[in-house]
Amino acid sequence: MNYLKRTWADISLDNLEYNYLQLRKGLPASCRFLGVVKADAYGHGAVPMGHHLLELGAECLAVSNIEEAVQLRNAGIRSAVLILGYTPPFYAQDLTALNLCQEVHSLAYARQLSERIAGTGKRLRVHIKLDTGMSRLGFFAYDNEQTIDEIREIAQMPALHIEGIFTHFAVADSIDRADADFTCTQFTRFTAMLDALKAVGIAPKIRHCCNSGARILYPEYALDMIRPGIATYGVLPSQDMREKIDLRPVMALRSMISQIREFAPNITLSYGRTYTTRRKQRIAVVCIGYADGLSRSFSNNISFLLHGKRVALTGRVCMDMCMIDVTNVPEAKVGDTVTIFGESGQDCIEVQSLSNRLGTIPYEVLCGINKRIPRIYFDGQTQTEILQYIV
Figure 1 (tube, rainbow, N blue to C red):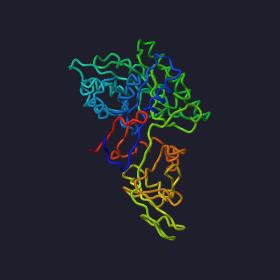
Figure 2: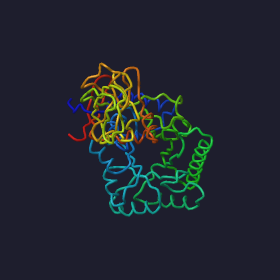
Figure 3: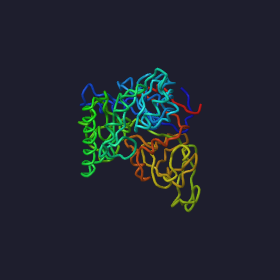
Figure 4: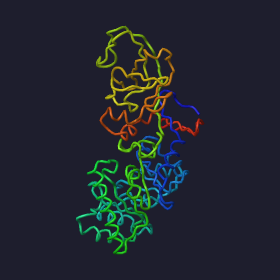
């Protein structure tokens, strides 16, 4: 298997399996696992991750939009696929043709979908989205007497079949007392609405609310299905999760050295001349830049791993390259592998540490890894496949 060995991501299928088993541990056998592969499986490759999660036992997959669903179908994935985001009603017949399941967040939206499908003899499976406090998409699950009547109307639409019902937690990854109380409030609102709907004869088969944080902190909320996202890929949704579950990162991002030179003291490096050598230093050029997803804000702000040693990023990150100080790694040479995040030797750089530097979350760092970077999949030490987006 050949690929441009410039910058690449190693994907561990062993760690994916480990995380999957950890997340299913202790749950009832009847509880389903919704493999979340939206946003290209958080940068890990939606099609390979989708295939492998289904092989591991996931009952269904989730995406953000119909294009992501089409990608899975074109790759031969025939499992249940839930679209968690909005699909314009114009595509309603495409949803049924592809045997997809669509979230429904309002009566008006349900009517539009139903009108587009009416007369085709088809029926669209839908999951009702309840807003219990996220204040984003959904029917109000509290302080709104119309919700039950609206969902009852949807249940009577011949073109729609309510297969599931769900909500999304806003702070389930926090152990702060107020946040924990709010998560409890959201769950209480959710179950109260489920009871109210059941009383009028509406009891969807699949009830789900557990994202990564809720699965870790509130496994008792699992109900009929869990849908952990970032945790599936071995990254904690917040630092409050440490010691709560053992997960293993699925991805490691690596690059390589293209040149090494020695510079005298007081020499400025890269655009903007933001770094000045303090002594005689060996500087290596690394084949990764902001066009690959390495934020320019990392300039002079993080370290990589080289031969298991920390090496500082020096100067501004360029579009396709950056520079590191390898003065204290005398064995460094052109062609050596540099680890941006992941393990190298006895050390490891976590995605969380990079996101902390940016004042953001690991989700954004992972999703920002550019499509020109190939993903290399490993089963143990055996390379099994390569995902190349460009060639």
